[in-house]
Image (cartoon, rainbow, N blue to C red):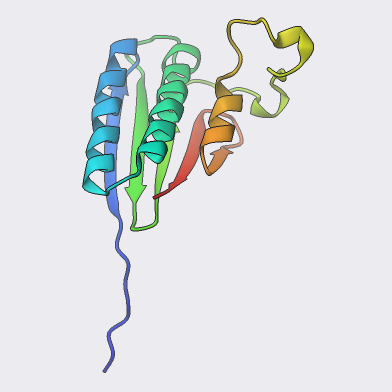
Length: 140
């Protein structure tokens, strides 16, 4: 009898208090996963950039720096990819109608580029219907 070729994945989870200093915990997890799974430097840099951006947005804009609210970070790692899910306890936002940061009238704005950058760097970026959860895929 032949055994099925079963690929297993590893799961990681973090609950971050809604304060900017919590990002250090996330950065440590990203480094741990990258080291353990031999993630390339480019993919590691993209994950670090995207996850920092999304987590800070969740803390500041989603949970409004309310330390009683958490940002939940999950990572599922299999031999070919890492799928990160970041969820805040806020009401969400309309991710489909964000101002275009490349439009002439927005070029000098100091904010408003995060989601645009994340969509460029992640292999896949999927928001839930309310906009308080995002799933980011990275091939490894």
